[in-house]
Image (cartoon, rainbow, N blue to C red; front, side, top):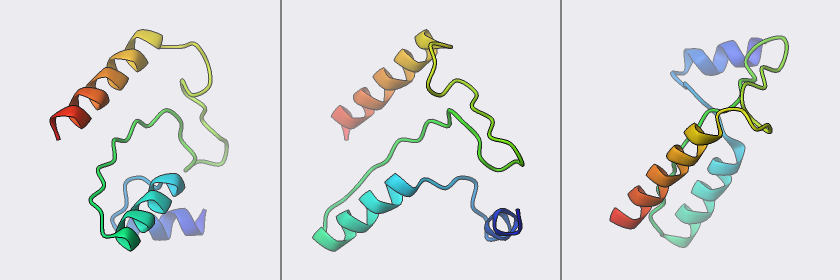
Length: 76
């Protein structure tokens, strides 16, 4: 929990290791990268809060978010 507190004190509101790897690869290649975050679970507590990740909950909402991300990608 100390590491989470330290990260929060740095001003971070979310951490995503896959996106940071993509950002590093884009920087290395000299390419632009746009990332779309959808927070489906929470890891900053003593116990993992799975929320709607990995289940059929909120399927309509997940579909709408995916469509917004795709529309944004096309417009960029």
